[in-house]
Image 1 (cartoon, one colour):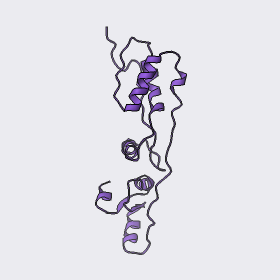
Image 2 (cartoon, one colour; image 1 turned 45 degrees about the vertical axis):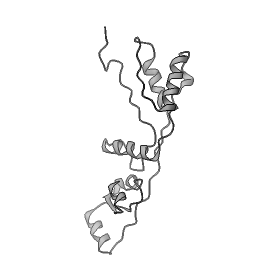
Image 3 (tube, rainbow, N blue to C red; image 1 turned 90 degrees about the vertical axis):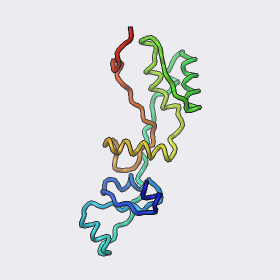
Image 4 (cartoon, rainbow, N blue to C red; image 1 turned 30 degrees about the vertical axis):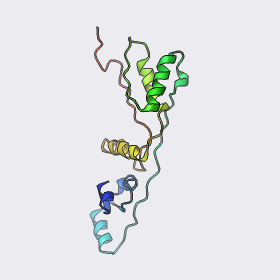
Length: 152
C-alpha cells in the first residue's frame, strides 16, 4: 500500500502476486526465485506484472429468516447493521445471543474495497487466505459458549 502511495513497483513471492495486485496502481512483480528477479532487472527474461486474483466470496448461509420470534432483537440487529453501530447483547443463558450474533454478517452490506483489503491483509498474515485473491466476506468468529465465565 505504501508503494502505491509513492508510485513504486512491488516485488513479492509468486504465491502472493494475485493478492498483492489488489493493492492499487502499483506494478506487482511476483517471482519464485532470486534468479528470476536478477533476470528480470537485467532484461534477460522480463516478468509480466501480476493481475488481481479471483475474489474469494463465502456467503453467510445464516440469516434472520431462520429466527422465530425475537422481533425486537431482530429489529435491533437490523438497526445496528444499517447504521454501522456497535452492539452489546445481554441476557440470560439460552436466550439466543450467539444465534442472533451469527446472523449479523448476513445482513451487513458488502465490504468496501478498502475494508476488503484490510480484512485480506489480516487473513493473509494469519495464513487463512488462498493464493488466488482477496477475502471479500465479512469475518465472523463464533466462540464456544463456555469461552467466558458465567456470571452468578
